[in-house]
Image 1 (tube, helix red, strand yellow):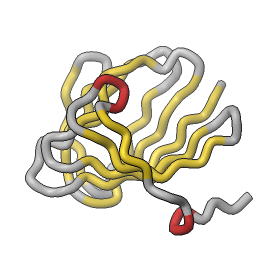
Image 2: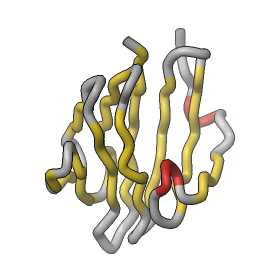
Image 3: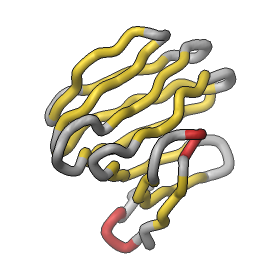
Image 4: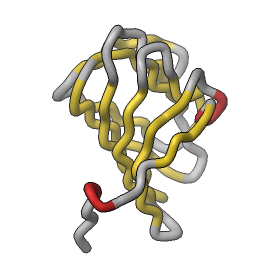
Length: 109
């Protein structure tokens, strides 16, 4: 399957997962798994959440920010990857002055 992200319509998701501000996202969902190209503006965050039935991989394309993973804060920047296994919690935070652009895959297990 080929996912042509440039042809997807971007959505603005306010306070995504209980986070701050909004997430700009282009997504594909096949009923089980989600592919997402997203951007967080400065000060925006995806709320902390636990992956009960799936895992998530986030690859940072542009910018920098922080990952809150199981209660511990880690810096993240372009060309870094974060993995949140099933049963763990995380949040993506843009605590920088520029946009944080990323690609994520949420895979059911």
